[in-house]
Image 1 (cartoon, rainbow, N blue to C red):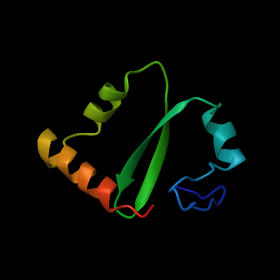
Image 2 (image 1 turned 30 degrees about the vertical axis):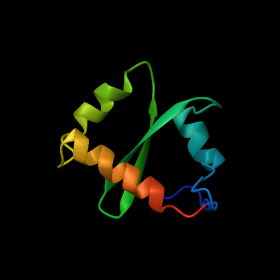
Image 3 (image 1 turned 60 degrees about the vertical axis):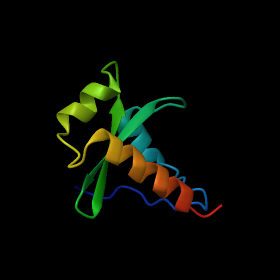
Image 4 (image 1 turned 90 degrees about the horizontal axis):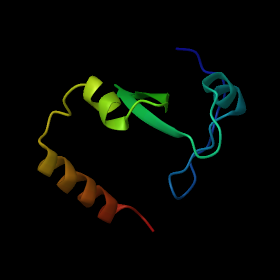
Length: 82
């Protein structure tokens, strides 16, 4: 993996995807992306015509059941700083 650009995280957790990467992935306003965590690195992939559920299924099991996953997400959401 090679770094093409650098972005900064805002207080709301938002990041601007560098133009070089947007161009390489053919990303446009309103496009959906999926993030895949690999150790301490994340990979971003454009979601095309394929359903997001199919992409997530291909990524393999999350290591927890759906209810636990939802509870963890809810807890993380509630713990975020305003």
